[in-house]
Length: 285
Image 1 (cartoon, helix red, strand yellow):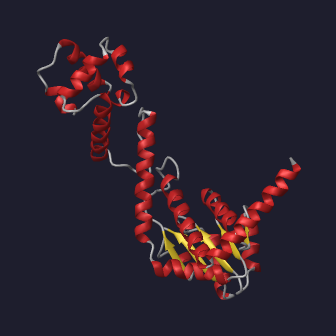
Image 2 (cartoon, helix red, strand yellow; image 1 turned 90 degrees about the vertical axis):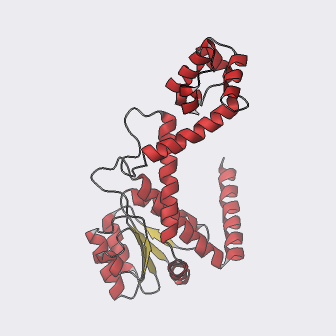
């Protein structure tokens, strides 16, 4: 479409002015109405429609659809998304939105491709059979752990989680073989976690780790390893976009696998508990 705008020679002066504006403001044009474009180019709606038809589309709306698709392919080829630096300086808000979407989509595809039914079933069986689960996480991963805890509590699965590393040490010390542990750590090299895992392994506690370090010291102490894509580096990333999307996805899948094992029972319990909490909350207000 842009090549046609650049090369087309059967345009009137008004059409050429519109075409040049489209070339110079291609991202902006995607978010304009035909009336706005006419005002910006000192032209008229019929002139814009006539130009669009010369380009091989029915009107301005279809022009924007085709141009948007072509620009997206063009940017994908020119600037593949870097998980550490997914956007560049002076990019528009909509370009940033598109790049974060692409990063999330690629992360989900990569994460999904690394999971296996065998490992998911093993992890779900451990969680289902345990008296309670101890979650171990720090930093950004703690937010995902708290969300996972919230989901499990709503289907009557007792979960212990602390924001304080020292308290997590007490959890490791208190855990017994009737319990299980879930480590949520992207890089997997936290020294304290390795100590906790060693202690709990010796006590017969079943352990799951969600990590990109699938051959690391922590992973080797755990019964089930749910892998994450290796993508981010600590030194250069803007934020933990990709790793947290991946962790959230794997935890959501794991929760869903646990839920599905007693689907009717879990659904009934969740509905009843939600109803109870909402009733108590409304009675106070």
